[in-house]
Length: 274
Image (cartoon, rainbow, N blue to C red; front, top):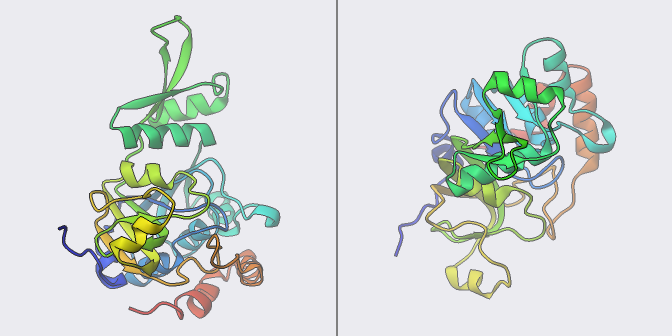
């Protein structure tokens, strides 16, 4: 029987070190691990490098709080509200490095990391200026297809130091289930060097066996489990609660005025103590 991995936010955040590369669960306004991001802000982490496909609210909070030195993503949006406001401001002012990627390439890199191979080929990006950018960054390389002799882009495996994934159900050992859209989160779990799960509900292992979904993570993958009910707020949790668009709009307005930290302290940190 594996040992319990259930810890509090304070203990879990110690697994994230200054300078680490990090990825989080969900997309734009869905299933972001906001309770854990609040803990990162409280802990004063700095110099993190963020990697994801289609981040939104959680990324913007991390940028506004000064946690990040750089971002690699295909897009950073607030959906109908436009670009992520703090990300846009930081990039335009030269305070944040942003490496633009594509959805397919990020997924390919995570898949390579999850499968334990050095790269994954992708099609459809040859001819883009992104090829030159990524070749300089050392993340893509144009190679010869060994079967037909044509060119193909090889995306270097993405292996984040830490993945923080918000799940629906988890037992104390790290066996977890995501209901609804899973995005790339199961790849992130298998690609990352350390995995922290925050969960809406901590259940016993027998309960998990009765849910008609395969496990999204097992005890072999997970380093820490944190019970954080409503831990994705104000982003959505499929089947449990919708995105709080009133709170998101309020944050957007604060961020556009350069006051995002005020909102974070008033609305987010106040919800999640140590």
